[in-house]
Image (cartoon, rainbow, N blue to C red):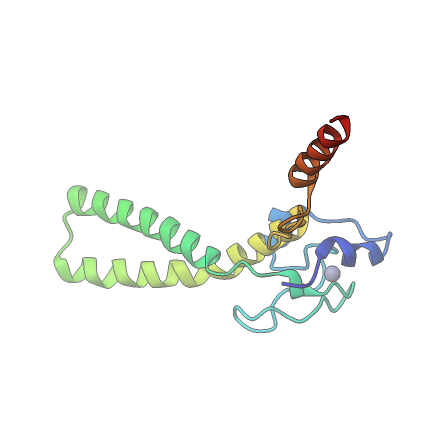
Length: 158
Ligand SMILES: [Zn+2]
């Protein structure tokens, strides 16, 4: 990931008011202006916002949306199914006919807004891959230099 949302936000038009990440996510809109469409396909992100020009190259929620959606939807559907199986005792075919479509439909319905919400959170918190600053290589840096300086000072003293 080479794009930094912080640097691209420097060129943000000042007239745009930033939406909340949840609002932008649930509406599948650009996290900076809240107007442009985030997706160019069902789950395919657009290259940039058509309204404010924000480059969506920073966005990489990976498998986070799938994990959260599958976990949440399966917990809700399984809970409702368990309750209905005990209380209503529907026939087995009715359970198959309702539970599987509910699982699949619930996941498909939630994937886009959850992915958009996670992208908006990435933008808001400027999340990206870790960028580590070097603290020096072998033979460099404070500890070795300090020990060397102490040894040289002791040698000078005698
Ligand atoms: Zn935008």
